[in-house]
Every structure is written in structure tokens, then in C-alpha cells.
Image 1: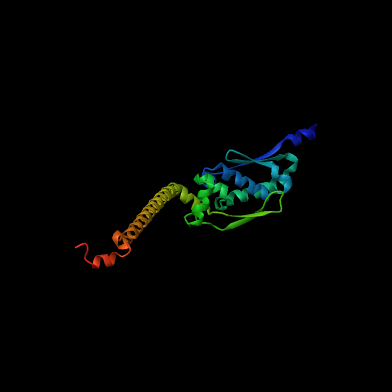
Image 2 (image 1 turned 90 degrees about the vertical axis):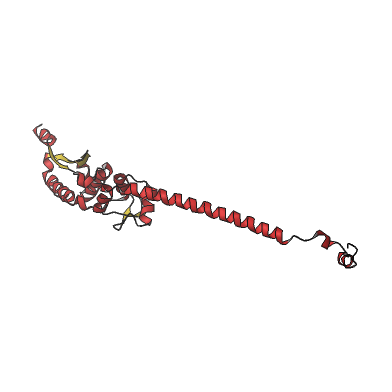
Amino acid sequence: MAKREKNDIELIRTWTLSAAVTMGSSVRAKGLLQEIQARLPASSKKAISLEGVDLVLAMPADEKPAFTAAVSVISRAVHEAPSLPVIPREIQDILGMKTSERHRWLADGRLPSAGTRTVRLAGRARQITFHVFDPKVVEDLLDRGAVDEWRVEDAEAKAEKRAKAAYQRKVARLSKKKKGTKKEDGNTEDPASKLRGWEDFNLDGLLR
């Protein structure tokens, strides 16, 4: 009985993720949890959980060596957290952008990539490669409201493109209409000239 009560006593350690780390994103916080779990041995992965912005490590008292080792791994990860690359789903949540916007702004250079990462999907042989982003760059984009600026720029560019296309269609219609008018003018002849013998008739002066 005494042994069971001892095992029921847990070793607990908590780390609070700052706003500088999460950038106000629950998706980023969960991503950091998954990063930590990937660094822990299989026996300790389920011992850590995320409660709001708090990482909580809880293990039975008789697992003190494993607990101490896990504390070391987690403390190091939390220390490195501010510099850990931001992955696609995190940057979309932090900046409030759509997947299509991320692809477009990445392609035109407004959203700078910090490189790529390749991972294997859980339970599958297939690997995927995606761009990651510098947390300092992401924080700067968030602070200056870059996404709102880019959306305004895109809307203006789209409107300009539509206006240009409408103008080109109008020019094409006018050009086609003008060519049709010239063709009609070029075919204008005196109807009488098509009559057989008209020139002889005219030379005889019968109409004078």
C-alpha cells in the first residue's frame, strides 16, 4: 500500500511559453509541444502536455531519473524556442493568412523563406518538403501589419489588370470595326460600271 501511494505521487515541472515564443498562436504552441515530444524518448512523450501556454511535465515519483532527463531536454527546447523555424500552418495562424496567399506571397518574394524542411508523414513512407520561416521575420511582419498591406496591393493590382484587359478588348473591337468599314469603302464602285457595254455606250455620247 505504501508503495502504491508513493507511485501515485507525481513529479511535476511547468514551463510557461512567452508571447515572444508563441506570437499569440495556439498552433505555434502546439507545434513547440510536438517538437519537444520528438526529442523525448518514447517512454516520456506522453508525460508532457500543453495547458494553454504552459508545458506541464508530470511523471510518477519512482521515475525520477527519466523525469530529470526529460526536464533537461524540455528546458533546452524552451530556451531554443524563440529561434525555432516557423512552419507553414503556424505562420498562417500567426499572420491570419490563407494557404493560397502564403503560396502567392512566397512565390513573388514578399514572404521570405528561411529554407526548407523534409519530414516523413506518420505511418507512411512518403516524405514532404515545405518552406519554413525565420521567427524574427514573422514577428516583424506581424508587428507592421504586412498581410493587410499585401492584400491592398493585390486588390489594386487585380483592379488594374482588369481595367487593362477591358481597355485591350475595347481597342480590339474598335480595330475590328474600323477594318470592316475600310473593306466596305474599298469595294464601293459605280453600279453602272458593271453593266456590259457601258464604256462603248458612254463613248458614243448617247447620254450627252
